[in-house]
Amino acid sequence: MTHVSSDGHITKIDGLVTEDRSVATLLSAHEQGEWVTVVDRALSVGAHGLMTMGLDVGLDTVRDEVRQEVERVTGLAEARVAEMLTAAQHAYREQLDPEVRSSLLSKSLREFHRWQDSFFTTMDIDQAGSIGGRLVERLEHLVGSGGTLEAQLTAALDPSADGSALARLRDEVLAEIRGVRDAVHSDRGRRTEAERGTQKGFVFEDVVEDRCRAWAAGVGGCVVERTSTEGGALGREALVGDLVVRLPEGGRVVIEAKHTARVTLTGVDGILAELDRAMANRNADVAIGVSAQDAFPAEVGSFGLYGNRVLVVDDGTDSLFDVALRVAALLVTSARPRHGETIDRVALLDQLDRVHKLSKRFSSSKRTLTEAQNSIDLAKEGLDSMRSELIEIAEAAAREARVGVDR
Image 1 (cartoon, rainbow, N blue to C red):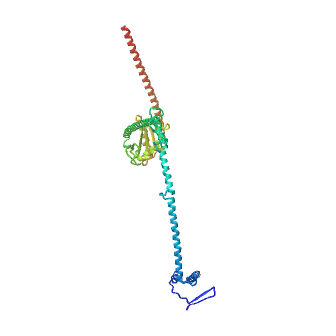
Image 2 (cartoon, helix red, strand yellow):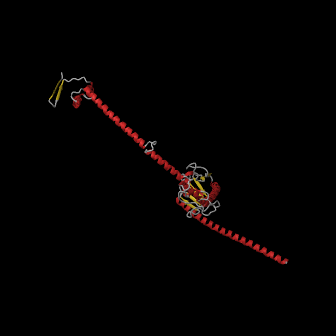
């Protein structure tokens, strides 16, 4: 049996049992520890509602009144929304409906059409005084027949007019063509000269080879190889070292032949570095650089000794190349003494010094003899010229004499 007591502030309910499913559903949504609080709130809300609507009103009546209130509020909301939609439709027709002449959009379209008509009228090229007409007249004056552009192009493209663009272009093209022609002729001349120099080099190598074989025949037991077209120890493309002479004692002498107007001494491309490469390429002990012309620097002269490198000037008509071969053989012998053999270094150096001095005297004497020979040749040419002139004078005198006798 349920017992309810209250002192005006606190109400106690003992033994309350309800079969209302709403209460069970409400409690199932919360933890069991919260049920007392949930029930307390439910009683407070229900009591407040009963007091508001009257204590003698039943729960069904409350539900009906709540439903009616909700329906009333919903109806009011729908009516308000309908009024707003009607107002929006009216505003749309008033402002944006193009079919309504008083709408803002209709007015804007009419103004746009008026502006469009005015614009096309002002741009009509056939309308006298219009913007388009004036523009066409200006363009005709600029680019039409006899216009400014035609006159300027005629002046600029006249090849006969001094200072015209086409005349300048023509002159530039002709200058480029002449430059190309001169470059071709110059390159052709250089190639021809290079080919001549190369041909001279091959011919001079033949002379040096013949001299080597003649010297080797006198020594006996030597082998001469032409190696200028074969790769060596430095690679298949390494052709440095034109000739190799294998001496009877087993030493090797490499020979580099030069037929150029100038041969530098030092540096990466100098003859001394080239002879070092030739010795490495041909596995030689001594190297000889022989020049067909007096192309070495002045300090070298016609014969120079630089360690195991010998420099000599000989065009094939002197005996200095033979001396260089003998000096090279002597250097190989001193570097490779046979078993039990001793080399007198002081005597060797003394002999080499004598060779150097004698080669200088030889070169000086040859230069003096060449100058004397040139002087003799010049004197001979002068005498021949004088002889021819005397003969002409004598013949002229004889003709005059014959004419006098005939008279």
